[in-house]
Length: 184
Image: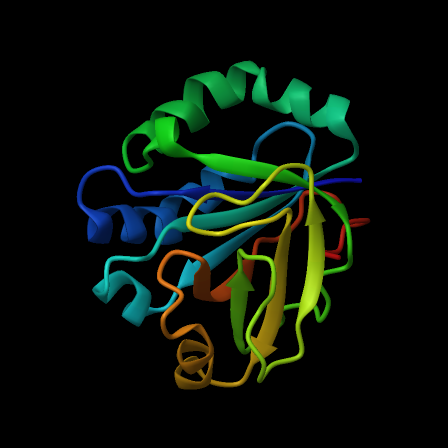
């Protein structure tokens, strides 16, 4: 399974981009050939208000070759890319393949914290994901730690002072085109 995580800053008006991403982009993206799963990690309002929010998503493909075919497909080139250009700063995008770790618990409900740094703060049950490349600055290392908490206030207190190295979000997993897929 090829699991990848993306972080992309907004292009243009962040609020317009957020609304478009949440209401339109997911439906376009899930029609990408070969895609087995797609999750948007939607930053909470406080992240957008303080200007630290980035678009964060995860994809699942059968393998690396299926992922390459998807991103070189006519559909991705002609439909998805122009849509992304309208609200994402694609030149500043970062992604990494997830090469180890479960990222459990499955983010069904609650608020997810993604910690893009060597060691997360105490106060949550963290689950590491090993990455194929280092996280973007100001983060460090080749892991992202995930935790699921009940409330946004609790998540935001965990990330206080970690501007840019953490993201507090509500995960939304889109219906998978294949009935065999489930997020891991």
